[in-house]
Amino acid sequence: MATTLAACSLDNYLVLPDHTMDERITAARKELGRDVVILGHHYQRDEVIRFADFTGDSYKLSQEAAKATGKYIVFCGVHFMAESADVLSRPGQMTVLPDLNAGCSMADMAEITQVEDCWEQLVAMGLTTDSGEGITPITYMNSTAAIKAFCGERGGLVCTSSNAGSAFKWAFEKNQKLLFLPDQHLGRNTGYALGIPLNEMVVWDPYQLMGGVTPERLRAAKAILWKGHCSVHQRFLPEHVDKVRAKFPDIQVVVHPECRWEVCQKADGIGSTEKIIKSVKEAPAGSKFAIGTEIHLVNRLAKTTPDKMVITLDDSGCLCTTMYRISPQHLCWALENLVEGNVVNRIKVKENVKHWARVALDRMLEIQ
Ligand code: SF4
Image 1 (cartoon, rainbow, N blue to C red):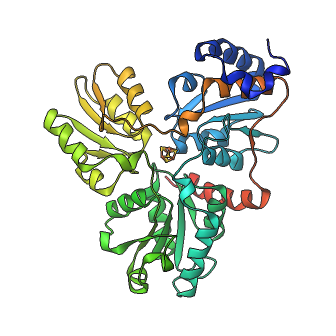
Image 2: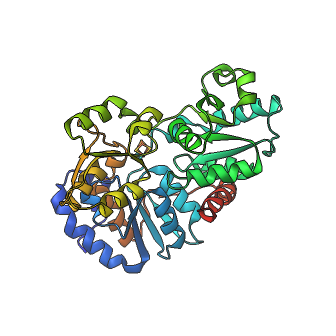
Image 3: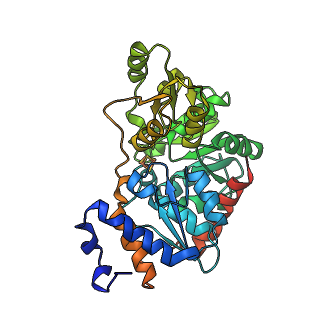
């Protein structure tokens, strides 16, 4: 192993070309052996995801994190995913995020203090008690550990795009109303698929008085949706569906449920990244797909299923810039530091937050 103490500074790595990293990452992994497990989200770039022991969407990766036995979990994804891995980890395990700047703009749209304010107002209106008798709070995986803990403590849970429908059903068994954080589109698409009319779903804007919703509408609503979105998926528009269908009349449009409701309504299929991959892989040769999700996943699907035509729904490309932050240089730096006994960029959720976040995550892992 050619690492030196001087090489442990990240700046020394960032100036190196990508192709020089492969051998070093492979050597560091070999040296770490079973002590390390590398998890890679589907939106990671090829130069990074090829080193992952497990790839998946946030749901699949949270299951892998819960099963991991290695001393170190290196998460090639974004901050909230690494936090969830830490919450689900065993005592003595450490979670590393190779670049701490890999955040998620959607997760940043809900701050815990804003959520607490919202809840206080709902309690003051008599719609729920502080402990959640009246409204079940659900948070999408793409949220901070503090928000997951908030939901866990009030009888709620976490969901991903794979199991949002089951989470809604679970929530409605407890209460007639739910608060969904932070992605309004996933919330609306899920509620609508379960038969909730659009006018029974309201959007809570944390920057407006009383969320910008009248008390009458809040009382009548079955679902209160937080005003957050994914900047990658919100870019897909209904006209993109029309355009691709005009060009390829037999194409199937499959989109992620973080896309706008209007886009999902026009699509042939809606699903999590795992479901999108499965639909394409299982389709007969010659099938054509236009996919509405992050571009790295679409390009990889096109490469790995050459017997089908796979294109992005919007050719202007939708890259998740925060996922892209994890570079081979960051991964190499994190692994070589672990070899030298330095745990860099450790993600450590506070113990009091961890407890309730774990409750909310465990509830998610128990439902289908
Ligand atoms: S694709 Fe969207 S939701 Fe996913 S990490 Fe990037 S910004 Fe966040």
